[in-house]
Amino acid sequence: MQSDIEIAQAAQPQRIDAIAEKAGIDDKYLEMYGKYKAKVDYNLLRENEHTPGKLVLVTAINPTPAGEGKTTTTVGLADALAKRGKNVMVALREPSLGPVFGIKGGAAGGGYSQVVPMEDINLHFTGDFHAIGAANNLLAAMLDAHIHNGNQLGIDVRKITWKRVVDMNDRQLRNIVDGLGGKANGVPREDGFDITVASEVMAIFCLATSITDLKERLGRIVVGYTFDDQPVTAHDLHAEGAMAALLKDALKPNLVQTLEGTPAFIHGGPFANIAHGCNSIMATQMALALGDYAITEAGFGADLGAEKFLDIKCRLTGLEPDAVVVVATVRALKNHGGVAKDALNEENLEALEAGLPNLLQHVENITQVFNLPCVVAINRFPTDTEAELKLVEDKCRELGVNVALSEVWAKGGEGGLALADEVVRLCNEGDEAGRGADTFQFAYDGDLNLREKIEAIATRVYRADGVDFDAKAAKELAKLEKLGFGDMPVCMAKTQYSFSDDQKKLGAPRGFRITVRDVKVSAGAGFVVALTGNIMTMPGLGKSPAAFKIDVDETGKITGLF
Image: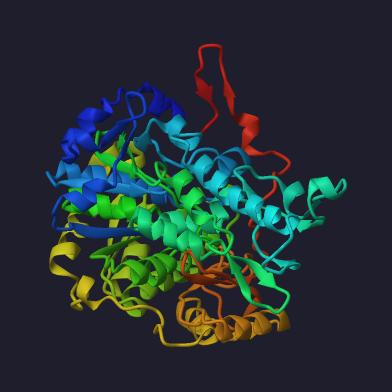
């Protein structure tokens, strides 16, 4: 069996100008990056009238080592819609170099349901992440230069919240001391690095609707506090203009294609735990402008990525999904039911039934909390039995939700036709309960205070009994409310593996509480981050990082990237 990268390398993609023509992109907006990728000038949105298409959000159950195939399903669904003669665009997150080398290899779909050029997309691509890192670190440099040159703003170096970033998993950089070596080398202080994708600049990049909006958001970044606890912003440091200049070209969405030639935007957005985890609003809006159907995805499950997409991205931009796809596999559900990874090939209806509540809770969150129509896509494996598939279908039908078997990994768009048909039906007719884009609602009202917003997410989406706030978090919440940040939505930083803040509690746990250990404001992005459990914004490498398997031969051919 060919690997994902071998399948991608064997394909013969179309030139990107042909893909652009298919998408209806005028040549004057196209900026070529070689033969198979291009940037599309955001002035296309400003200069051309358009009626937005239907917006379809793809999310999933809580991830397991068995895998779910969310991106694979997203790409396959788009190709299936294209096979049905629909004008469709894909908008996906840009994989990060750090996770690619550290955790799992590539992240551009799989099998015959991928976006290409796969190697470029997973590695340096068009340099967007470099621009984001450079803008972030420019602000850090300007902050330290200000302190070094007299500190007229009275910044308390013990209260600096802004970190440097690098797009590589490197635990050595989590906590450092810098500015050592005497007066000429700066002011000594504690510092640290995050991974680029977890940065506030990434979140701003993904939520900005224009260059002007980008610059204004960058200016609102809070980098730290003065001795009397007043916030200091990037605007106070006169940094936002230069930061926006570094990001000017990066803000243009990247155009590529699926293996079957469906146009796809890959732009911004990993890390649902901290930076909201969706691709850029710029790419989403461009996909909606160009396609009758725009297929996008959110990071991790419906409790994290989708919740942030709906409660943050949609709240801040006015988007309203027409339909939602929840992706699951029988194997992953059996894993949630207590079966070890190496025993998932055997039929086990008891374990499947024990794990099914995880899927059902995600479905209920979409249909009952957010009041949107939903279809479950079962990413089919050869080892799935008819009895197992029927059990999943029956349980979902009890909730008024249809199940579509997806075989896009093996068959490409052909394997997603049933899913495509159900998505079209939901987009155009809504579900039997009358849910559609016009019934969409948030998980919490915007006029609640920050504590109440956190409690609403924890009790309504996670099904927690309540929330405990550590003393540090409670103090910070009170401070942020006093400073005028209380009207912002909340970005929950929580493990992706469980509805709870304990990654070992699989399925749909009950009888637990969420502990918020700290909060911080991302004023430029426009949300407050609540940190629960042990969330790392700078992951480290394991004993066997994905980089072990990645290599390149003398012809330049890459292997091991999935």
